[in-house]
Amino acid sequence: MRTPPHRRFPRAGQAVVLLLAVLVVLVSMALWVTDIRGLSLRRLRIRDGGDAAALAAARWQAAGLNLIGELNLIQAYMLADDVWNAEAADALHELRQRIQLTAPFLGLLSAQTLAERNGLEELPEAADILRDVTQEAVFRDFYPEAEEDFRKMGDIVFSRPLRAYPCSPLHENSEFPNLLVTQDFYEAILADDWCWFWFYAYAFLQHYSNHRDFGAVPDLSTEPFFGLSLGALETSLDELVRAEGTERAIDGQLRDLGHPPLPPPPEEPGDGEPPQPPHVERPRVIRWSVYDSARWTRWDLLDDLPMDGDVRDQYDYFGASATVSVSLDGADWLSSAKAFGALADGRTPNAVSLVLGGFDDVRLIPVDAAEGGNTAFNAKWLRHLRDHVPEYARHGAYTPGCRYCSALRTFDNHVWRARALAWLELHGHTCRRPKTGNHSNSGGTHFAH
Image (cartoon, rainbow, N blue to C red):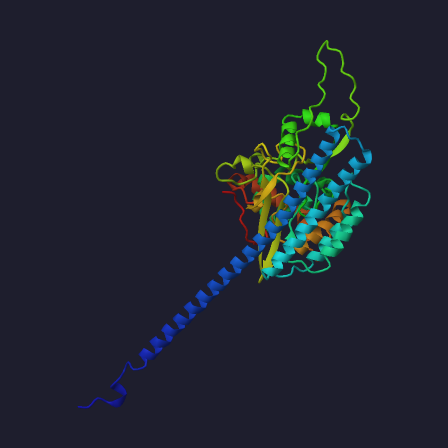
């Protein structure tokens, strides 16, 4: 009996279906591998570009600090040789301040060049925002034309689109910021993250009544681009070298430059000794460039710096770091770098308050250990800080269309605050401390090792 034709090969079509399924899986895997490879390449590209930009900016910071240190040494040597020229002393200090303004701009220009060479994207509005910052920056105790020079340099740098944004603090006293200039505060409100208030602003949440409770908004920073964090000290050379270790540091740096050490200062008379003849030149009060002690501190003294292990002594100092934000294909990346080195006697460059140079190395550092903010470029946030916060602080007014202003409106709603307090009273003890900063989903190394 012959088998009917339609029943001879009952499974003939199954091989084709199986082959098609295998082909679909193989194509999917190929696309997946290709996509992963593309993502990895983009990540490497944006990381390398950001790191190169940050290192370039930090090199200019090192050069600026070294030049300022050498001018301090020239001034010390001039006075030690009993050469007094008030005009020359003023000119030296003005030159140091000009370097203090110029080095960050040169660092920013260098960072743009490296970012462009690595094919990173232009950042919309970045140049406009920084141009506005230069128009409002005020340099206290600087030479008279400092603001005008700063704006002219800004016109040069911001005449073209930017690819690397300097993530420096926009406000003074950023180590104890007002909540109105703290991005975590807004993000906690928008996400109903009441645990954030449990750790960082519980008392404020309990006693808040209106916008006046926030207090005064900090002034805009006078060093918004990779600032060197320096100040001026008025004192005589004799008083300066009497500070512990300062004379030894000055002599060591002079020796490295091929100069003999400073002549010793006149000794102060002891009890019962007759006073020495008055010295005419060296006690003259003069201005020197010094480190800002609040910013040039030790990393291991910072409570909020996540670290594994101890920081080596030769690297254990905070201050004058360069952090840049770059973007590529919708992804953001943060990179931070800092100048390091040592004085001639082996101590860190900031071992004495007087700037003496000694910076001969530049290294990448964790963004959480940088001096500035650690969030990627966000035009809406920066506009809110500059344009909306002052208006709210003065009058409690909200700007329509601003997500951060909507967060303030929510916080001003007593029903929202009552819900938050009621929940925290019951469940606050279960909260786990949240990680602060970096709400931009950006990459970057955030922890020290």
